[in-house]
Image (tube, rainbow over all chains, first blue to last red; front, side, top):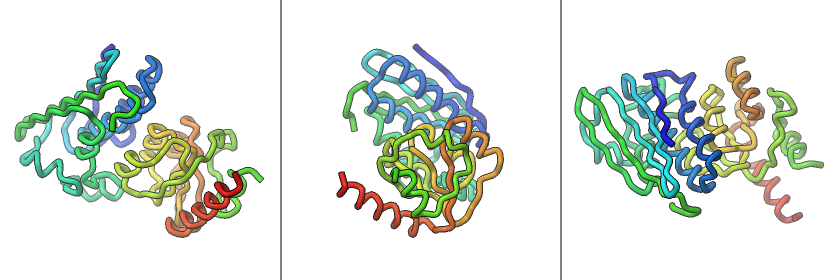
Length: 141
Length: 117
């Protein structure tokens, strides 16, 4: 099973919808509770990164019996220093977004922490591709 | 007295969504205003204590299966946020207490409650 959702820049009304749909689908196919929880965190953070930082993008979930792949592809400014972006507390989110409780510099660190495998590629002024794998198991953290 | 009633009384909570939204069992509480921190640490059934009152609070609540949201500091969500919360069956409650005071009262309730059990 594979599903892809369009994610729009600065659309805080629909933010979280894609992650919510992925959650429902994973529950329907009977993935482990812990797998669903980790997938929700990864999917929501990836979705919010597109909403906050990119011009537009997509969030994709590929469901296999033993694992789940969550991918986020965006057209946007790209990440100049990927190591820095993974540093907890580092954020380039604008002030009005931080006031809502986003942009704490925990998005990518959360994605790394709750996924089992992660690949990221980014080109300045082109966009960012993020691929994560989450294995379907009861305690994966 | 049910746990919900005890919490509502102690924190002087006002329920803004319909009573039907109070359907989940409260298992504990978590206080936080950074959405990523809450997403990573809140447990299903927790009551989430926060200063935020925008609709993304409902999105995070739905994703994490919290039992309800306590919005502190006498802040009221807008109509749109209430509508989303009603649709998603997430109870939104407001209190005049601040994060610290509300969390302290909840901590006390849960300490006593776990001793009773």
